[in-house]
Amino acid sequence: GLVVGLANGDDKLQKTEQAAIRLCLSPAAEILWPKHTLGETFGASEIIGALVGTLALGAQTEREGPGRCVVVNTAQVGGMVGSVLLRATPVGSREVQLGA
Image (cartoon, rainbow, N blue to C red; front, top):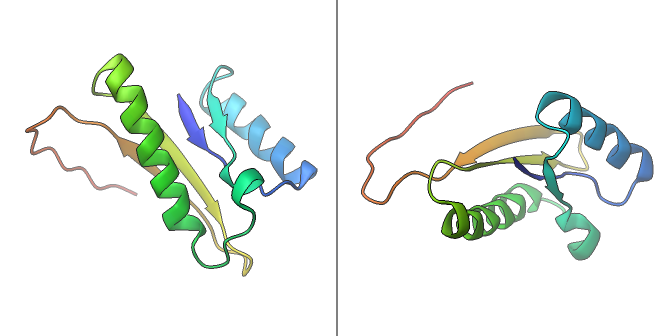
């Protein structure tokens, strides 16, 4: 699996998120930390996380084929925290799934 992490360099937050990912998804999950490179993006973290996730998913799909997915975790300074799952589908597929 592939995860775009929400941690911004805060060691405690990063360790907690990493432990949850390893426990709930996979011990081998690859975690990308865009905020380490980009810093806080105040109000744009969700879209930047989704963009990083989409680009990583595209590269992964080129290597391994469709059906792969990426979890994008986000957190805002105001306290909002969320996750979204992006999944690559075959070209021409009309598959759309929405869920809680």
